[in-house]
Image 1 (cartoon, rainbow, N blue to C red):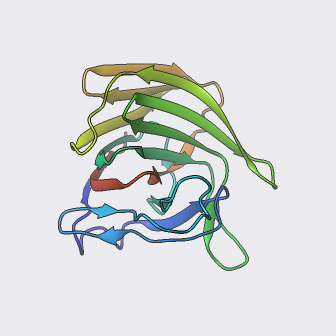
Image 2: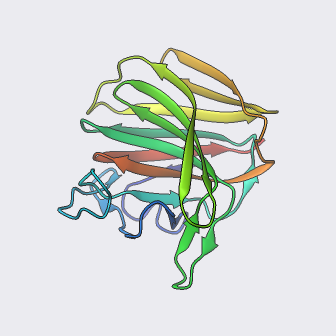
Length: 192
């Protein structure tokens, strides 16, 4: 299924959820053919004056589900595909997630992070980095899928097969606008 981020085509297919790393709960800005995060004067996001926003498909899918995300970013942007183990409502009913894997696209290539929440803070571990230039301001398509305990990642001419022994059988699949301005045009997911 392909979900476009044009107005009226995605709103009932995703739920907002937020990492425990940040307290603010912003929503995406709707543009003609995409959604994006905003620049803000707030310092609530640490050193980056940008909103961090995540959206997920509202049910878990088998890890073998293939996700393709078409996105772009301004300088220092980092759009990513997120595989969350749980989406849990907090005392205000806001969905939060703490244990997850990020597949990040940015100007210097791809990073894969494993993030774990210990009840107090989120800790992260870099699992993989593939350094190569990626043009800001140009739509890119990032693909992920799992085969056994391997996370497969494809972007342009770069193909990665990363062994992750702690992969779960199911995940909530989503996207996240991290750090700079990120734009999302569509997301395609295929279940196997």
